[in-house]
Image 1 (cartoon, each protein chain N blue to C red):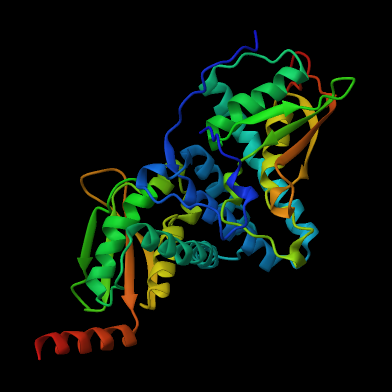
Image 2 (cartoon, rainbow over the protein chains, first blue to last red):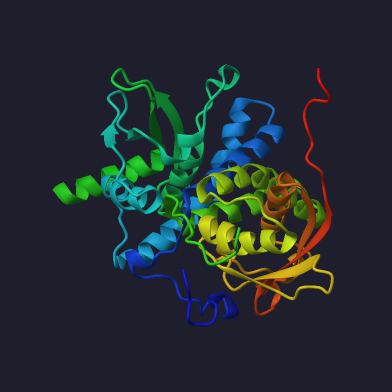
Length: 202
Length: 181
C-alpha cells in the first residue's frame, strides 16, 4: 500500500485517522498472522504447566484484543444505540465481528438445549487453526481459545460478562472438526434479559 | 539475478487490525510476565528470530527468488520483497556504509505499532523488536549472520522507523553430514 500523505504515525495518537470505510481497512498477509500466532503458542507452551493454563494464556491475550475490537467495530458501524439484548449482541458477533476478523460470517449460532444461558457459535474451518496440527499429547488443546478470549473481551466490554470456552466438535461429514465457542452468560445478564423481556411484554 | 523491480507475490490477506491488536496483546503479556523491559526486548527478538527462520522458506518459495549474490542484494530483497509481501509495507534501503556491510532500512509505516502510544516509563521498551528478529532469523538461514536493530522509532518521537542492518559475516553452507558416511 503506498501512501502519498506523510505517515500517520507522525500524528498524535488521538489525531490519527482510522479507516472508516470497510474497504480502506489495511491488510497484512495471513502468513504473518499465522507466524505470530504460532510464536504466541510456542511461548505460552513454555510458560504454561498444563493445557488448561495454555488455553488460559491464549484466552487472556484474546480478551485484550476483544475489548479493543468492539470499540473499533462500533465506531465503524456508526451505531448510535447500544445493544442490551443478548441475541442482538450475539448476532452482532456472528455477522459483524466474524467477517471483520475472518472474512466470512460464523457458520452457526445456536442456543444450547440444556440451559438457556448457554449459546454456541460455530465455525467449520477456523482461519487461525488452518496451519496448526495438534499432536496426540495435546489432543484436548483447541487453538480457538484465542477466539474464545476475543469473544469474551467483546462481551465483557459490551456489558455481558460470560464464561467463554472453545471446543472441537467432530463432524461426521468432514475430516476437520468444527470449532465451537461455548458462551455461558452470568446470572446478572440473564436477570437483566428477563427484566427486559418482562418490560417488553407488560 | 538482476535486481530490477520484480512483482511482489500476493499472499492471502487478513485484516491488519486484528494482527496489530494481537501483537499488542502479546507485548502486554510479556511485560506482565517479565518485569524487566530488557528481558521483554530480548524475548521479542527471540520470537522474531524463530519466525524469521521459517518465514524465509515461504519467501523463497513464493517469490521464486534466486540466490542473492551479495549483502546489498539481500538487503534489497528484504526491503522490496519480504516486507511488502508479508506486511504490505515498503521500505527503502539507504545509508550504505563505505565498505558495504551496513545499511539502513527505512519504513514509514509499521502495522505492528498501529494503535500504540508508548508511555514514558516504557521508554526503554523496543516495541517492534519482533521485526529485527525476523530479519536476523531469515538472513541467518541464508548464511548471512547479521545484527539488526531499530535506531529510530516513531513511537519515541522520531519521524520514521529506521532499522540498522549490519553484516557480521558470511557463513559457509553447513552440511548436516560429514564426508562419506
